Each structure stands twice: as C-alpha cells, then as structure tokens.
Length: 603
Image (tube, rainbow, N blue to C red; front, side, top):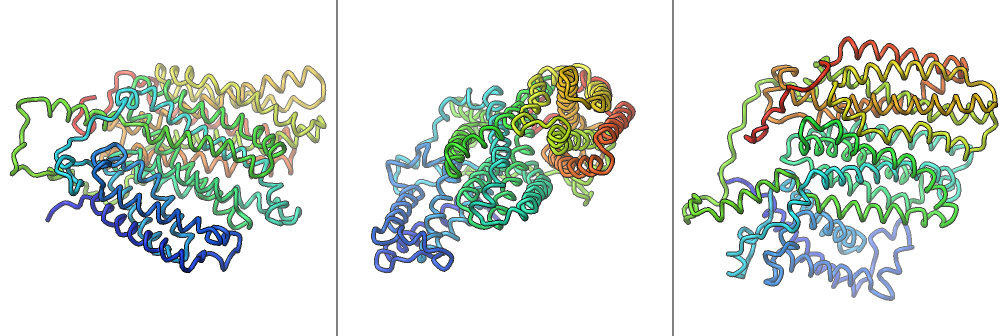
C-alpha cells in the first residue's frame, strides 16, 4: 500500500473548497446574507448595499484555484511551494467564507485542508513543482531552487532571535492586557464593578488552565513530528485569534475564550521555542543561548503593563491593540522566514547530490518517495511524558521551576498592596518598584554561561540559598525612610538575580537530563522520539503551577499572618529547595558529556 502524501490530499480539499467558495460568492450577489445575523446585525453592511464580502469571497476563491491548480506563471515559484504561506492565507479564506451565509461549507473544507496541510508540514513534507504541477511540461520538470538567504535564515543567531522575539510578543501581549481588562469588563462588557474581580480571577485561572493543558499536547506533537516549528506556528495563529477576540468581544465568555487561546499560545511558544533552541545550538552553549532567548520574557514583562496602560489612556480600547497587531505581523514574518538547520542541511545535501555525477536512482523505475525507515520498537506502553516523571533529576528541575514561579507570582500579588498599605505609595510607584526585580534578569546570558561551566546543581543550589536570605531579610523593611527604601530596592534586586539564576538553571537541567541517555530510564532512552519538547512541556506545567500557587499562598499568608511571616515562609521554602537541589540535583558540571546523535547525524 502506498504512502499517503498529506500535502497532495490537502491540495484536493482546498481545490474543492475554492470552487465551492467561488460559487457561494456568486450566489451571494443575488441573495446577500450574513450567516451570523441571528447574533448581530452589525455585519449586514458587508453584504449590502455594496457586496464587499461577496467580492472578497470570489477573489479568494479564484486565488486558491490559481494557487493550487496551479496557473503556469505560479507553478514552481516560492509562493506556490510554500506550505507556510498557505497556513497564513487560508485562515483568511476560511474566515471570509464563514461570514457569508452560502459559504459555511467551504469554510469547513478550508479548515480540514489547513489541518491536513499542517499534518504534512509537521512531518517535514514540502511542496515541489515536480510533484504537483499540472498542465505545464516546463513546470513539471522544474526543480525548486534553494530558498533565498538560506544560510542566514537557518543560522543560530537568526533562530535564537526569532524565538526571543516570539517569547517577547507572547509575554508583552499577555501583560499589556492586564491593566486594560478591569476597565474593559465594566465599560465594554457591562460587568458590574462588584463582579469585576471575580471575572479577573476567572480569566487568570483560564490562562493557567490552558497553559497546563496545552503544554503536554504541544510537547507530544513537537516530539512526534519531524520539526518543532509546526507547533511554534500554531501558537502564533492562536495568539492572533486571541488578540482579535479581545478587540471585538462583547461578552465575558469571549474574553474567557480569548484568554484560553492566549494560554495555548504561551504553551506552544515556550515548549516548541525552547525545544527549537536546544536542537539548534551546540550543547556547550545551551545555557548562554537560553539566557539570550529568555530575555524576551524580561522585556515583555517590563514594557507590557506600562505601555498597555498608556496606549489605553491615549488611544482608547481599540487603539491599545495597534502595537500588538504590528508585533504579531513582525512575528508572522520572522517565524515563516526561519529555516531549521535540519531542513537547511537537507537542501544543501540535495544540491550537492544533484550536482554529483554519481547520483543514484535517477531512472524512471526509481520510486518517487523512499519507504520510511523502520522505527525502533518500544514495548513499554507507558507514555514518554510519564516515564520522564520517574526520573529524579528531572523532578528536581521541575521543583525548582515551580518554586521560582511561585515566589515571583507571590510578590506580584502581595508587594503592591504592602507598599500601598505601609508606605502609601501610588499605583505607578508600586509598578516601578518591580523594575528592581526585572532588571537583574538582563544578565541571563552570563548566568547561562556559568551553568554551562559549573553545572545546574551548583548554580541553582547557591542561587536558592541567596534567594532564601533575601526573602527573609525583606521582613526588615517596615518604615517609610530612605535607608529602608534603599534596602528594599537592593533586596528586590537580589530576589530578581536569584530568580533568573534558578529559572535558567532548571531550563538547562531539563535539556541536560534528556540529552544524556544514561541518566534516563531505559524505556525512555530507547523510545523512538527524543522527548525534549515533552520535557519542556513538564517544565512549562511546573512553572504554570507555580504561577497559580504563588498568589494563593502569598495572599493567604499575608492576609492571615502579615508581611513578616509571608517573607519568612517564602524564605524557608527557598532554603529547603536549595538543600534538595544540592543533594538530589544532577552532577556538578556537564562538560565531558556529548549529545546523543540524532537522525544519524554525528554530535
């Protein structure tokens, strides 16, 4: 039985959808109607008196037909071959069809076709003129040219830059919406001020829940597919849809859906993004490069709340989303422009093989597609993600991530109220004090270099010990005098420094654990796929759990026992974690270990 070529199947589905969309658009000229008019009449102006939506559907249907057939001028071009461009354009066609009454069926076909295209894309399939051109002998014999700027687009610098910007955009949009939501719930949605806090809590829980649920799913997909880039792109689409829902939502339920999509986007960006960095750089530099990649989180959390509030006050609700839309557009361009080193290597290998006079299998009897290599048999039926949880070293890294996230989120909840109650600071002053925690995170690359040199156990153990000391000493800040203000800023800077050291150490420890097969259970090490993305999914879940636990724990203790007891408890938790990391963590230095060869490529 032959092998299913997903992009060929998707092409036939999209051709069907395009024909249906073209007919629906023409029929809409005679019977103009919005499918969703039973919910709102605001969209009726798109179909009459001027048939704007009908024209858009006709044009998009013709474009899809010319693209997938393809027309002779398009055959073999970059636009024709690119699955990434399809995954960006086809959602627009599906949206236009879904709005028109006659276009609901082609919208469903478009969604199915996009899913099949993504299936093939995640398995490394590529469109080529040799396989899909029809009606043009010249195009049939054309061999796709090498992608433009291939060396730069597949370089370590560019890939790390793309991941860092993706993290920045995700964190920036997540944080810039926070100061906007309370007013939007009351002014736009119509929620009573008394219920606004309840809905804020629901939205926070929705984001955390989506992050927890989405992380293992995207981790599994990224590990089982040939490329983590697929989930990386899906996360971008989820973020774009989430931002659009926030802009146009008129009910709390749509805000909840938007926040859930934002959580799924965060799961995809962090899981697939970190996995992409790990498989791109040399093992000896993972810590340093991880520090650069996570700087996007620092700048996103620094700039998001402030710029969000300013844009909301100066430009209004919709104007506040102008900058996020621009950032998403930049993110779309960068993610589709990125070429993984593995794919770039295949292009270079194909070019060298094509130019070699001893190329095999060029006769007509050679199969167009080689049969897949037999996969190793793994008799263990336990999912890899559960097998990973049996490993002590990885559990210590997850504990570190949970404590780090819980500490920071506890401060996000309690520190502003403490400063307002004790020192009568303004909201802007309490917001600026978080700079003392965030600025030290800019030294992430230096921390990563130290972890690469001395190992995660040493750096993380010392960092947690310092974190315990800084947290405990915060109980000394009690009076509104200059000396205690200086002490507060210094201690918070120390907390920020310790936080970045512990979080980066746990990220790198996850990598070192998975890429050293002798440290994993035998069943995990012998499985078919390297579970790096699933390991980072567990890391993401631990971090999300800390973000949910920290505000509850910090707020409860401060409310019942006061600021001093809360800082003492957090300090004790950090001290205990320091002891656990020192005793049960991985070896002191990762040097001397080598990454396991992957796909036959020597390390």
